[in-house]
Amino acid sequence: MSKFCQSCGMPLEESTHGTESRGSLSEKYCHLCYENGQFIEPDITYDQMLARGKKNCRGSGSGIGQFFLSTFYPFQLKKLDRWKK
Image (cartoon, rainbow, N blue to C red; front, side, top):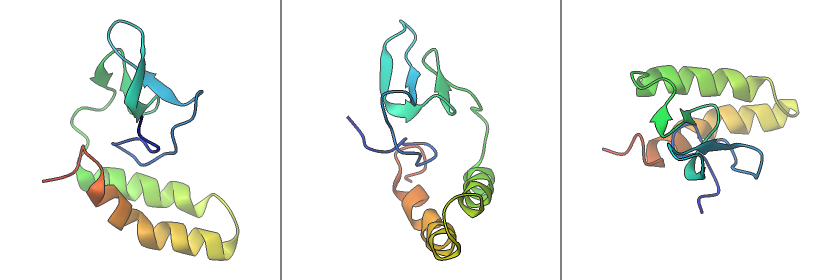
């Protein structure tokens, strides 16, 4: 099972998994990105996901933590299955 959503990079925990079409938990994607076996926003671009993720990074943790999250998020996002080229 992946440790992070392979679309947005959110940590995957028991309560954050998306669902497959038959109702089982997705092993790759979170509930914010994937539901019933489909992406919630199938047409979102890498740049849009990056902007959303960086915005969310600014809202969590301490100032130093926020800096590191927003700085390294683009590198993490590029490595996720949905955005690999």
